[in-house]
Length: 341
View 1 (cartoon, rainbow, N blue to C red):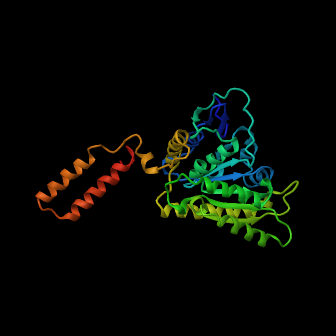
View 2 (cartoon, rainbow, N blue to C red):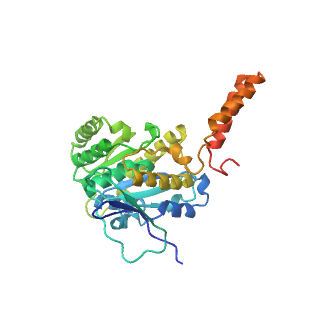
View 3 (cartoon, helix red, strand yellow):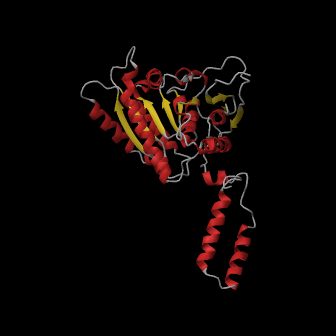
């Protein structure tokens, strides 16, 4: 069988009663393509836009087909092939500002797909746009390091601000520290001397939202002029450099927060986050609880701990030995099987 070349990450379907998310098993397929997925720690960059986004992707990643696949899903993802052998590969994800989606032609049998009905809380089913906003804010953002939005494709900075404030109002589902929430990179196209004032006005508008800092860790606005018509590959070189800096800054934050996950962990956590969203789209996602989903803490844990402490007390052993031993056991037990061999 020929290798699968599809890049669909998520597709949304809708009937009279609810929405359904279809997952194309993309992250597991990417995991299989990496030489050392247990010790490779990717960064995920999500590009959102239309024509300007596609031009930037073609210029920055000419070897990738990610810029031509938007119509077959609300989100698509693939690896930047130039980084697949590195310790920190880059995963390129893309979506569109209007979330237009066409049905894929034919029956796709080259990769596994799973369907996840999403029963919406309450009596009224939300409009499609509202549902996808929840997918962006409460599912995809959990796995995004840098989110790059193209203002021209949205209709200007004000439209981007409205979108970001919508997501901030919905709120994040993440249980991780604020420092590792997605970093925002907004690509503007403002001629003349108005960029500085417009960028400042935009920043003040979004930062004034009370929920912004809960959903995003930083915001940066860059200006790319003269991108109409045919553009050379070097036209977006400055944007590419800023992207690399944003990726590096986010990686540092993840290292400091002990949340730099391997590709294997990312794929597994996404499966669990998708299940969590499908079960209850407004619920938070706990990485700790999710990591124990298939090897839960014994219900007798408290009793065993009490018995252990009683033995220490009866033998009048130093307290610090008990604390160190208990801490070590809890930490090692928190790892999945075979992770600490």
